[in-house]
Length: 265
Image (cartoon, rainbow, N blue to C red; front, side, top):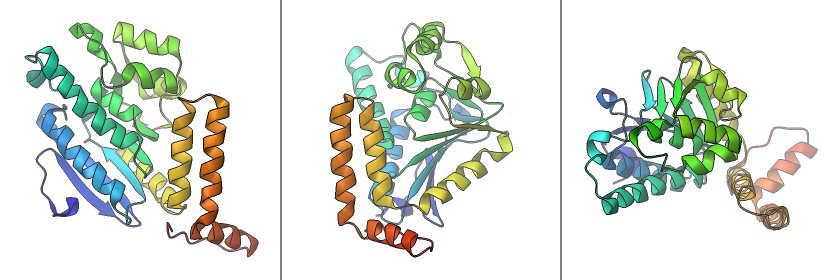
């Protein structure tokens, strides 16, 4: 059965024209707190988007009250160290499916994005947040610290000193602060978050899926490779695109003064 046809307990899924895959975290009574079932279902949907040739961009969202309020503490509180590690295995598996997905991922954030919720946002390529949202990594107040990539992605998006400030104190911050420190792309009124994310996704759907995929991989690689190694990887990816129909179409359309029609081939 296709991921499109399944009924999920913790997520809603749809594919809308012109190729936008939308996953909505759907545990409203728990403010979309992350448990193992949500991770399993989100991974399956994200993998479906990853493999679906009709999907060209992905929006990840919650509801008006919460993107996700972090890990479900009722579920994780009683874990032993091995169970805690197994839980984070699922977390990382899902977040890397966002980060490494062949399709660009857009976080549309309303309400709360705390702990693992903010870490999920930081795994997305583009982050659009509401002006009244509340962000933070409050795990330090629970006797732990962010374990879903927060200590790794925050300094890569912002700065190491600001990452330490917010991770060490657990302080909350708003969308305007997140934009100021480089953690998100854009802040809009709460009612416009999903619309703005959709508008951005539609722009991406017009680009070459192959070029987007390789560009995303190269930018992600830049966080982990020295500049010479990253540039060599970029060179190979760039050259490989000259075997694609999209490259011929894109350059041909430019030279013929018309809009390109990319097929992802």
